[in-house]
Amino acid sequence: MPTPKHVSVGIDIGTYHIKVAVASPDPEGAAIKIIGKGYAESRGMRHGYIVNISDVTRSLKRALAQAEKTAGIEIKDAYVSIGGVGLESVKAIGSTIISRGDNLITDLDLEHALESTENAIPKPLIINRKVLARIPTASKIDGKEILGRPIGMKGVKFETEVLFVTCFEQHYNDLIEAVEDAGIRVIDVLAAPLAASVVTLTKAQKIAGCVLANIGSETVSIVVFENDIPISLKVFPIGSGAITNDIALGLQIPLEDAEQLKRGGIITADFSRKNLSDIVTARMKDIFGLINAHLKEIHKEGLLPAGIIITGGGSGITTIEDLAKATLRLPSQIASLYFNSSNYIQDSSWAVGFGLCRIGLENNHTPTSNSFKEMSLGMMEWVKKFLP
Image 1 (cartoon, rainbow, N blue to C red):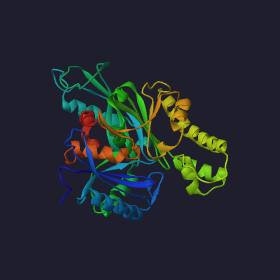
Image 2: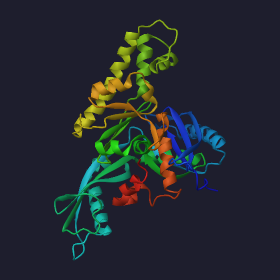
Image 3: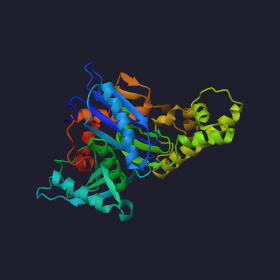
């Protein structure tokens, strides 16, 4: 028996925690209603990818059992996120000559253009990698940029620029195996930053331009939006765990106490608060420096009016908003989880799981045709249905 059609399940397998979220439509008007949650400490993970499949499966089973108990259902299938250092994006441009004699652009022309973009990706950037999403970012007809869908327009040559989101194929296969070994059918696999953006960003933020930064234990993932479209995605192999380690070493205290201090907790220990602030500030500047370098690389440094929105377990670090604002010279805020314009919560560590649930409910639990990869140029219309 599959999971009930009116229920959607999202599985977020992170380095520090595995989170399972269960949601159903909210009769009171919000997009989704969370009816169950389960989480467990991750085992067998490193920098967001799996190093021991059986350990991950055991951890996932514990999280699933908790989610099933709170939701009062049996979970059989789910949407799953993938993150980690293997997740990247690359842009490519392709073109095609319009096939019809009357120069009317058809779906077939779009498919041909999309195929040419994938062929245009430099081979070293695609070898051993799986395409998770193909997101059109710009289109031209006879050299002139157009907005919206080109179907039905006329021209001789159609060009398109596409953002490809990819992961290591081995990481993808290991993830599928770990989840299936737990008895769960994988409906689809989505890039974690894109899933989180569904419930953390408003339409106004995405149109103006913003960067969503998910600060995890061992990785920081970012996705940059402009004109309501994701234009870049990147994962850095550093996370909030590095800050905990720095505090433990710098103040000579146990890791558990260092974690509490990082989050603003008060413990009985003889330490200098200035030293603590210096340690946290130094590492956070490193992290935001990496983000700023990427924004500079894509020519968006200091040019995102909606600023940086911070989510993930590391978003609870004290003074993180001020540090982000000072380093990036952008507006900064901690993410809230938006379910509609008037319904939101502030526990952003569940952003990926809740985002997967929302996508699942909009999909009515029907698997996408050959997943995100095969949704061609209509994919953005499909994604936009879930964006606030």
